Amino acid sequence: MTTRERAQLAVIGLLSLGALTCGPSFAQSDYPNKPIRVLVPFAPGGSAEVYARITMQRLQERWNAQSIVEARPGAGGMIATEVAAKAPADGYTFIIVTVGHAVNPSLHSKIPYDTANDFTPVGMVTMSPNVLVVHPSVPVKNAKELVALARSRPGQLNYGTGGVATTAHVAAAMFSSMAGVDMVHVPYKGATLALQDLVGGRLDLMLDQIPSSIGYIRNGRLKALAVTPAKRTPQLADVPTLSEAGVPGYDFTAWWMFLAPAKTPAAIVARFNDELRAAAADASFRERLAKVGGDPAPPLTVAEAREFVLREIARFAKVVKQANIRVQ
Image (cartoon, rainbow, N blue to C red; front, side, top):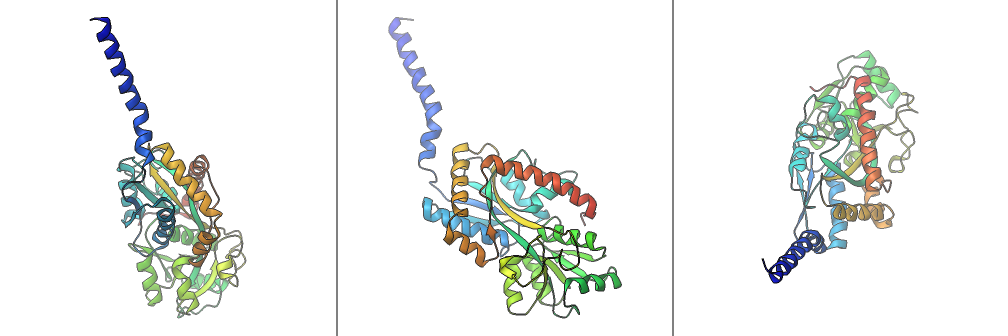
């Protein structure tokens, strides 16, 4: 091989190396150049879909990005979560999850993905307490009376949820365990369906997410007895906490977080995280969340979001055991 041929090969090698090292950054410079898909693991119309749409509308305005919010309910959120885990890690598929994501590993011996390692937590959107609501036909005026009624009728009162391991199920199981009552769990394929049956009088109660039920509370079709966090919430300022209303120490707040498939480019994850943290400080975004019952989320970094998810997995492993939450 001549000296000239060696030089040509060296140049080709350098060009190839440059293509490998610089190619992804060039590809990311025009991101996004196609619609971003956000999977929702619950039925349409629920809180997760509402928060996903609010967030993606902000990104559409700031990134000029089109988005598709796709509901794939079922199996306690695991159907959509499996799809997200197996999606290409190219920055065009995300999923919005809540407490059930951290609960499922403790409920199921086998799940079709690795909760801790198949995803990159991107950041938190919002947090929101649940509210204990009953149909007006239930003869109680407050949570203390509800507990007394449930104790006098073991196994007769029923509560609806959007499925096993959803926020409503975890909140209600904690309530049953801490209040010492025996109630019947009726899981649905989505919280919206359960709420419809509660409003229609086919269920007795729910520990529902405020965004879904607040309209029915305001128009008198449901009675709000208590909220679930340790402190009262501005959305229902006159409603006591469960801890105040007869279940001392009760404290439960739902959260919603975006995840990406593992190995999604770090630059894209960081950019999305930056937007979520900026949104937490944006008055108009906070106002939109407040109208549907959401509280501002902590401005978590990507590393902090991952630590939060891991802590929640560990925390709810204890809750599942203590509350005896079971797959039905």
